[in-house]
Length: 425
Image 1: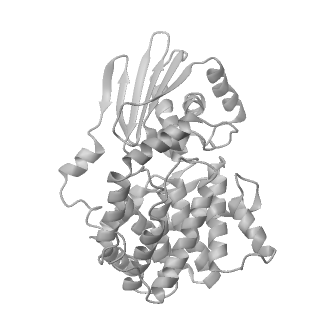
Image 2 (image 1 turned 45 degrees about the horizontal axis):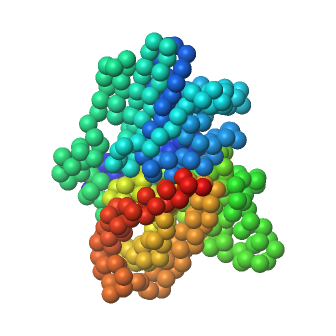
């Protein structure tokens, strides 16, 4: 795979976001729809797929104390700047929160489960006194696939998945662990400014989570228990505390931007911060750190291209696989060790289900970070889960395919049951 193609892929999949990407995508859809309505909004309909509902139901929304799909849509209408994409709510104020809550109190916003098989699907319908607009986001958090105004379609896009099906030998599908490792070793680091930005942004929110009270305070609790001597001050503890603290802050609605990976801010955090933490503990130079984080990003992008944006399984597991390979790189390992680390992580955390975005996600980030470090150390000691065990294959690419099949084919009923349990509470 050509170097420029990989750089283009990084540009596509590393995106700055403020807030959890599912409620933010809802806000983006409603802000877009509002652009086509000059009347005062009388009624708002939000239709979303089950996976979007799971992730937008309970997670914090940047700069506010309120949660929910209806609130995300209302806030997008009163304060959203659609031109800012996943930073659509970056400028929202407390007054905007009041105005959004007023729409809810007047019962102008309704939320329903969409009749769509697409896992990432959001439909917003806005009604004014004499006007109507409808916007659909599907398959990707910023992919506006339909805009309809007063019954007239003014924009419609071909399905992202259909375009992929119609394209043979896409850049994403030609990516492998081998080609990623070769790229990371040879690329001129002057081309990796976006990766460097991911280190800076995500480290900042990790530090923020360690200093302040957010959510379950998973990262801060680990840090405090290291200071007490209950936990060791080692690679695992620092990696877990820094990464989970970033998730603590993000899931609680911090206004700090993060660099998302493959459509998820938590994945962006879990891809970068375990690697950054290990690098800082080891005292590696800036270039080595940059190459390692690039490796982590690209392994995760490679896996997520097959896994999909949303699933019944936790996407942070894929980030753990990327981080494990990068930690091997920091510790001086070569390509076979990287592959072994990914294999070990696949065999460890593959069964972790997704029950929506929320404060508890920070614990899953912590768990996958611990698994990443352990898997890397095992690999460096030439210990690798064998192909005789479980669904692990002797080829890491086949193991990745099996993991993705598990998420896409084997868990549809789990997905429905989890959503049912969440909505019955």
